[in-house]
Length: 312
Image (cartoon, rainbow, N blue to C red; front, side, top):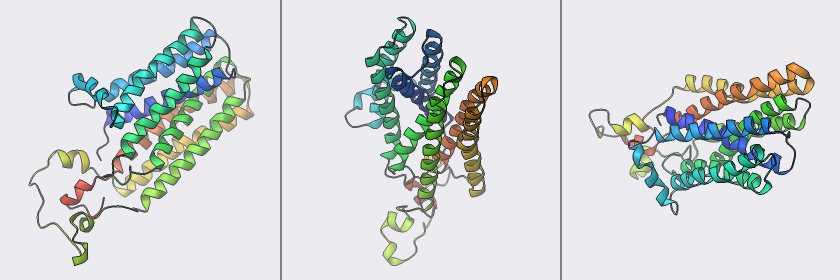
C-alpha cells in the first residue's frame, strides 16, 4: 500500500497523544503525578495539541474533507466511524479533566479515569480499521491492535516521563513505567514482523482465481494498459533492502535508544536526568513514524494479484 503522509502523521501523533492522556488519567486518578497547575497545563496541553494536529492531518487524507462529518453516522457497522465518534467524544472528559487540573487546581477523578478509558478505546478503534480489512493479510491480524495499543502506551509513557522529569526530577516510577512499556512494545513489534514474514494466509494468483488445482497460473495480459488508481494506491512495493534498513532505523529510534536513555536517567540525577528524559520522547516518536511508514508500505492488497504480483 502507498504510505500516505497524512495517515502517518495522524497515527503517530494521536497514538502519542492518547497514550499520554491515558497515563495522565490513570496517574492523576490514583494521585501518583506531580501536583501543580504547571505540570497539568504542560502535559495535558501537549496531549490535546497532538490529538488536534493528528485529527486535522487525517482529514487531509479525504478527497472531500467537507464531508468528513458523514463518516460519523455509520458507527453501528464501521470502525472508521466508531473511531471518529470516540475521537470527538474523548475531548469531553479530557477537557473536563484539564479544567479541573488547571483552572480548579484539583484532580476530578471521574474525568481522569473516563479520559483514560476513552483514550485506550479510541486507539483500539483506529487499529480495528486496519485489522478488519481481510484483503490485506498483513493487517488482518490480532497483533495489529496489540501493536497500536503498545506503541501508544510506550509513546505516552515517554512523554509523561519528560514532563515528570521537568516538574519533579526526583520521581522514579515514571522511568520504570517507560522502561516496561518499551520492552513490551518492542516485543510486540518483533512478533508482528516475524508473523508477516511467514506469509501465512497470503493469497496467490492460484487461490484468487480458483485454478490452483490445474498448476501454476499467470495472467494472460494486464487488466489495464496504463497506471490507474489501484496501482497507485495499492501497488506500492518497498524493496527488501530498504525494508530491512528502515526496520533497523525504526527499532533503534523507537526502542533501543529510548531504553538506553531511560536506564541512564535512572542512574543519573539533576540536569543529566532531565536532559535525557526530554531527549527520549521525540526520538521515539520519530522511530514510530518510520514504523508507521513501514506498516503501510509492507501491506499488500489482494487486488494486486491481477496485476502480476505473485502473492499478497
